[in-house]
Image 1 (tube, rainbow, N blue to C red):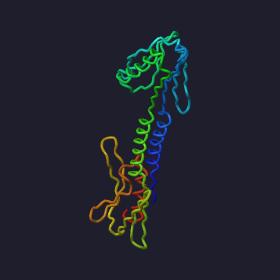
Image 2 (cartoon, rainbow, N blue to C red):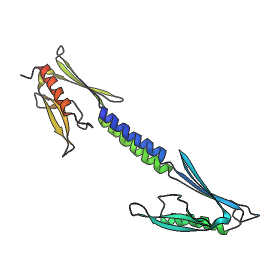
Image 3 (cartoon, rainbow, N blue to C red):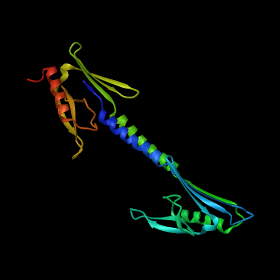
Image 4 (cartoon, one colour):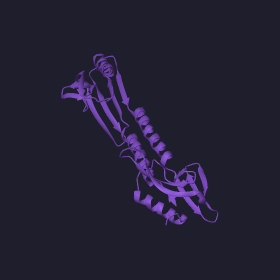
Length: 247
């Protein structure tokens, strides 16, 4: 009898896929850069670039069109307050959206840098860059670790072999880098049962050999992802018939 944890493998693959999706979509680099000619202080421009792996958004603002910079406080969908740096231009306000997770003090510091550049004709250039790469990588790694832990806990292949010639039953557990085997005498098996593990609605059906000393040897992991009551019942019936424990 062979047990492959397809459910656990699929579950781990979905979790790892979410981590990969976050790693790709979460990379976001925002750059606000300005330059001016020192001979003609009003001649120059500022550029706002939002870069993502699948697209890049660019906006250009001539210096002569920028009237100043303000700090706008808003509420996100969950009711939390955040601040964003906004340019006041001749065509209307332009929110820079340099960093969604910035505090009010951080946003104020960036607004001050931009305002200092706008009011100082001797400053030739300015560059402010923000990214969420480190945070994205850390979150993705956490998700990958969770998938790995679940895989190590539930992803083992189990083989149950009954041999009348040797009079033994062998339970083999194959993991990534190790294999363990446990042997018992066939004449020590007195029953085969199905039992439930877990709590409330999260119970799982397991099959176990009951030995003559009342020790139970589980054939399926207690933390299997999917429950197959009928499959477990068929397993019990096959073992009982093989061992002639069924009338």
